Length: 123
Image 1 (cartoon, one colour):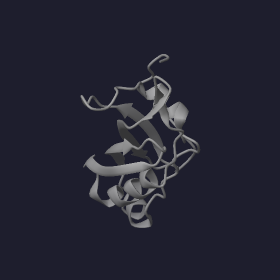
Image 2 (tube, rainbow, N blue to C red; image 1 turned 90 degrees about the horizontal axis):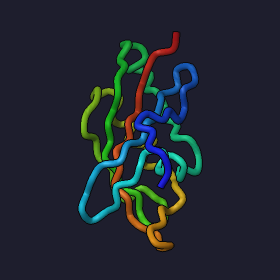
Image 3 (cartoon, rainbow, N blue to C red; image 1 turned 180 degrees about the horizontal axis):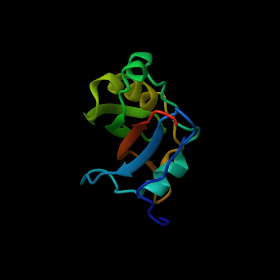
């Protein structure tokens, strides 16, 4: 499946949040390395840093559990942790993400994963 890279930044530019994808284990879905999942992403996840969060200096990581469907769309997503002011923007960005379907034995397979959206103020 390829090497595992547990911290693969997807968009590390200025005030743009970093996105890290980490798989979670579920008996009904394959455990796929974060490098493989990130490699299936069709375009970088680009959350919009909320103005109010910027103004208040709110930073942090929003952790989202998501299921990527057999078609590569986000089937479901929910926040596991992170600053409340940043959660909506993180969810919106993850829900808009599109992936190439993950193939298991040549067949598209649903995948469960954890996506970390790192909101940091630029220097």
